[in-house]
Amino acid sequence: MGAGTSPTGIPRDRVFFSMPYAYYDKLSAREKATYRASDRIVRVPLEAPEVVWPLVERIRAALEDACRSDVQAYVQRLVTTLVTDLGARPVHVKVLAARPSHDWGEMQGLYEPEEDDAPPVITVWMRTAAKKRVVAFKTFLRTVLHEMCHHLDYELYGLDESFHTEGFFKRESSLFHQIVRPDAQLPDARADQT
Image 1 (cartoon, helix red, strand yellow):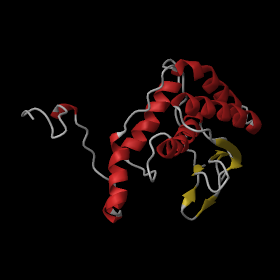
Image 2 (cartoon, rainbow, N blue to C red; image 1 turned 120 degrees about the vertical axis):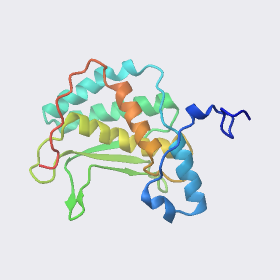
Image 3 (cartoon, rainbow, N blue to C red; image 1 turned 90 degrees about the vertical axis):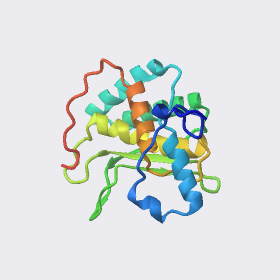
């Protein structure tokens, strides 16, 4: 091992160090190992992301038209295309109307892993809880990808748990920047809590 390399043999300037989130200290040794494994995965490489660009545009248009059934159909096609191309098992997608809320805030998305014979499910909501406005496209798409990343953690990466690590959020961002055309005109994000 040279002076310019880490114990793993990787050049020190190429080693990714992140600061664990506060809950890390409360995890068991096994959970900490899973957390660290998750944190090391920072990209989800897609072979031909341009294939889904038209589908992403259809999601944006259906969301603008507030057509829940179209949004659900297009999101299901997008997620099925991505997980299939990545070699993960399929996941069912549900797009529901207004987000549930409580004193803790609004729920934007939910991933439910396979249980018994029930397939895994991603649920996302397309309207805000308070004023029932359609969620901004960028927020909605990132929520879909966020929940899909939970699915990939279990089904593609074989992790025991799906923790919110820096690596997890980088994977979500990696997917977003690949599946949205580089020249896409995304409107400025508006507050989705209204």
